[in-house]
Amino acid sequence: MTGAERRQQLLDVARALFAEKGFDGASIEEIAHRANVSKPVVYEHFGGKEGIYAVVVDREMQSLLDRMVSTLHGGGPRELLEHAALALLGYVDEAHDGFRILVRDSPVASASGTFSTLLNDIAGQVEYVLAHEFDTRGYDDKLAPLYAQALVGMVALTGQWWLDARKPKRHEVAAHLVNLAWNGLSHLEHKPKIQYSGRG
Image 1 (cartoon, rainbow, N blue to C red):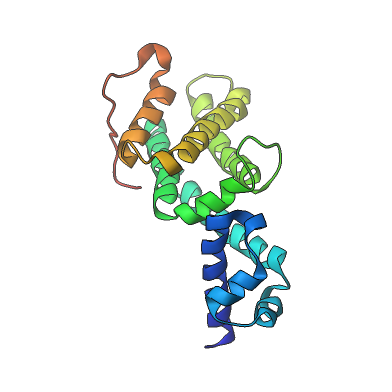
Image 2: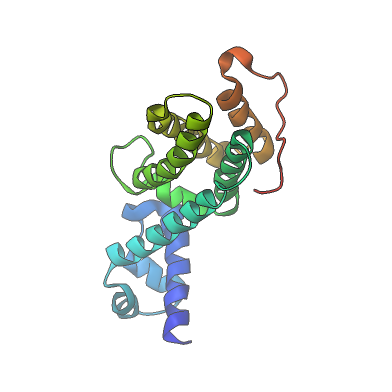
């Protein structure tokens, strides 16, 4: 096994272990045991548990951020909202170990930490899109940051809940999120459906 292959193997093992047990519950000993290597091999590649955890978290944050930001181009506001909701729920569904790592040791409601930082990055991208839409429709674009935080927070908290609930299905959850965001409580559709299902 090459050095790069060994590093990737250790990251895969650590990712699964951190998802299963959290940062505090995982150990270098167990990472080494599951990878069938000695502890010094793990230390050589990452310097310790904090080092390998940081790399795992950085990769998960980048993966989720890339997925979210890629949805925020083209299409109308409702389509963008649908794509963003589907992208986050798709990440929860397809990379649930990674999402579990992000939210377990850094809850969404905390003022600082990895997931909170990531949500602020995503909200910044959403804010840019909303500011443009607000401006073209005659709304005060200074309110875009508020709406961006509200939308991203709503989707993120729902994603955190759905991580374990897994019902209803992804598209149905996304449809209800969009229904609430798009129509507000006073204009909720009775049976919302995703209208633009090209992505997610």
